[in-house]
Length: 307
Image 1 (cartoon, helix red, strand yellow):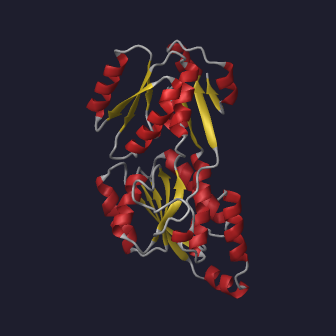
Image 2 (image 1 turned 180 degrees about the vertical axis):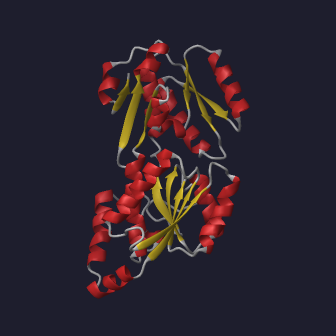
Image 3 (image 1 turned 90 degrees about the vertical axis):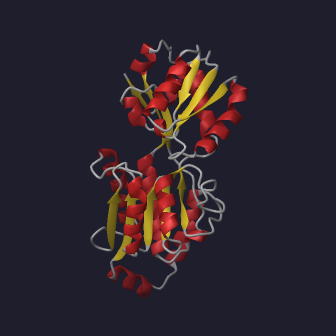
């Protein structure tokens, strides 16, 4: 189902509600929870949560006026996910906004009654959160982080900037990433590009250093780091290139789910959507340092070029 059709369908249903009933809703401040994996003072998360609040405000849900929001931040400590999930559930919000797969899993363990809207979840079916994208079937719904074809897109970009590339290591921590999901899709796309995929699951810094050192001993090698290296800020910090979703847009888009649920919709009946906006970032300084000649076709497609 397309996003436009989805919003029109639910929005049309809400518009048909009695005016008096909607007026009574507005008089009572509603309560939602937000659980984030990183620290409260991280500037990137501040921008994303501003996007969520903006999306809610456009739908009539204004913090401090029509809704109260309870925030919890784990500060990057996985041990805090379950602790904070318990805290939020104990507050009995009507819906909880969950960021990332581990955070969503922690919340799912704590409640089957409170609606959960997730973002930054790559494989909600494989993670056991939903039955299907079209019919989630439980108390969870939201926006998937990537469509399955994203791994093929990343590989194609590497091949475009480095035509002789022969092998690519898939480097990620399975504890925080849907590693098998990315590995399966990357492997399926690699053969047509003449690329060998090297499985490189890591758990700590030593694992990362060991995997990269091993890869560096082989010519014409590349590296994929899903899902984090899809964000533009890694490129502005010196990475080569990224292709990923516009996260601010995703957070704004997710506000629609919160709105539907607060107005009485069942999350089991709200289809999981895909992101609608993607962005490409390219660092020419890094490309030059690596000895790459950036093709014009890639430059034209880039939303941001760092020189």
